[in-house]
Length: 101
Figure 1: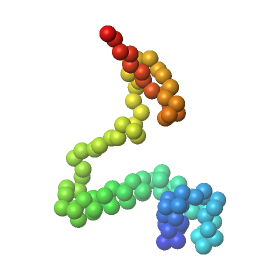
Figure 2 (figure 1 turned 30 degrees about the vertical axis):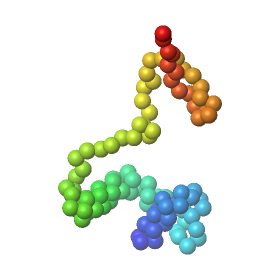
Figure 3 (figure 1 turned 180 degrees about the horizontal axis):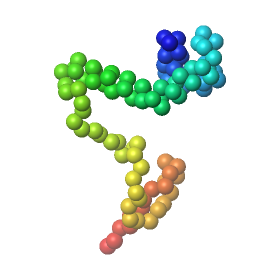
């Protein structure tokens, strides 16, 4: 089981495709089978929750966070009123405002 766990950590750390898992590990189909089963059973969520709690307690904080911060760069929102434009420097659409007066 330790080899399976380490193979999953390797995939997570390197971001490589399952098929490119080095030969030091079991076949990727086996590793993926365990990974998929653990995802469906909630195992990874439990591991993440326990690790977060232990780290927070070690830092002298409450085990459960009391707030969350969401970065507007990461979360898409509904467009606001205004005409759409194109910013060639940023290569994306942006809202344009007009000056009156």
